[in-house]
Image 1 (tube, rainbow, N blue to C red):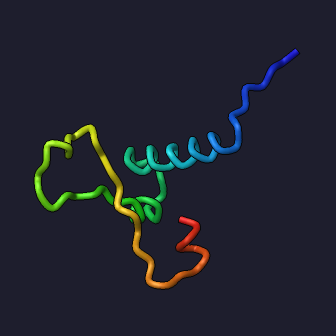
Image 2 (image 1 turned 30 degrees about the horizontal axis):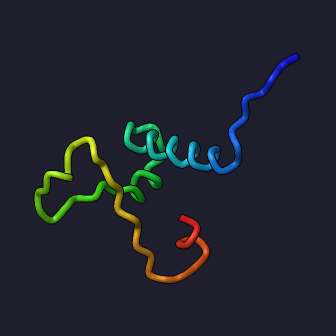
Length: 71
């Protein structure tokens, strides 16, 4: 008997998002995705802004449509 080890839906969604982000930062994703994800650059240097503390800026959309809300 074969047992499948599937993730629950919520964890699978998180896994897919993190996998896409990993591919973007390693140059394996399409350019249109790489253009959407930008590393946050702080205005000033703080101790909390260590190199292991990477954060992404959220893309800004001009209109409130379903595409902007979905991302």
